[in-house]
Length: 137
Image (cartoon, rainbow, N blue to C red; front, side):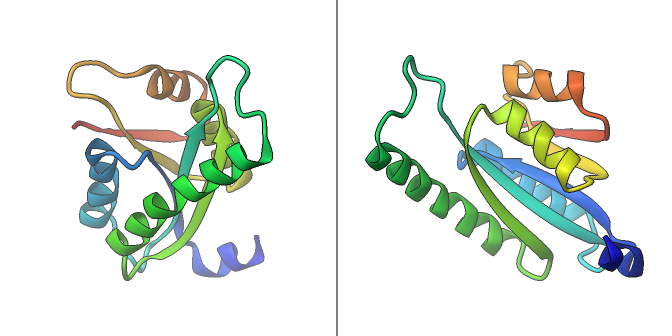
């Protein structure tokens, strides 16, 4: 908290999923924000929504490994920005909302599909307590 007071950087949470659509959020941040004025928190979530969910440690390890390339691509796409990379396993919308609150995000940046706002985005829009920027596909 003390460091934030000194830098006065806007805290931007970017939710990515590893799809080409998700990379649009990274491109948006890179094009719309000045690296000297924002601190970017990149979050990707491995959705654990299958009946019974992940059951064994090997399943969790595999899920964690699946997050690494997504975070690596985000780090590369945001070169020059001060960033924090976070990966989680569970329900994406809940992790986005919890992370926004825990990290004191000023804005959440996420994408929608070309036709509709998906269930994750809709849930975040409904319950977020900060500004949300939705980037079209």
